Amino acid sequence: MHELALMEELRRLAVQEARAQGASRIHRLRLRIGSQAGVDPEALRQAFAVVMGASDPQGQPEDAELCGRPIALDLDVVPTVCFCPDCAQEFHPADVIHACPRCGALASRILRGRELELVGLEVS
Image (cartoon, rainbow, N blue to C red; front, side):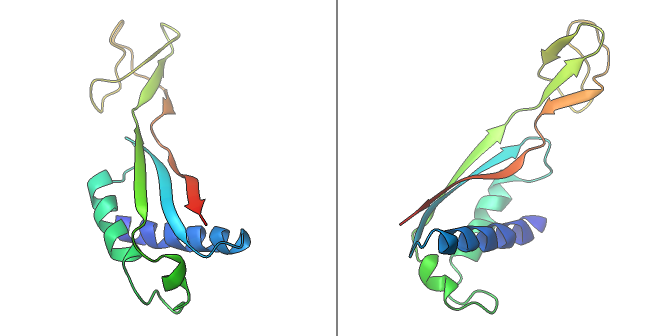
C-alpha cells in the first residue's frame, strides 16, 4: 500500500513547513489528487488516520505535538481531462481508453488528472 508511504512523506513535509512558519500545531492538510495519479483516495484517508495518529513518528517524537489530533484532511479529486488532437477540444474520457467522444480519436495528451499536491496547510 504505497498510500502509507505517501502519507508519511506528506506528514514530513507538513511538519517541516509548520516548523518553518513557527507553528505549534497542524490543524488541516489539503491535498489535490488526480483521478489518474494512481492513488486510492479511501486508502489515503486510512493511511492519514494511521500516520497522523502515530504518537511517536519515526525518530521524531517532537512531531507528535505538532500533529496532535484532530487534524482534518481535505481531498480534492481532480477528474481526468484530455485533449483531442483531431477536434482540438478538451474532453472528459468515459474510461481508461481516452477516446474522444466526438470523433473517437485517442487522446495523446492528458491535461489534468495526474496531480498529487499538498495545496494547503492550516497551522497555528
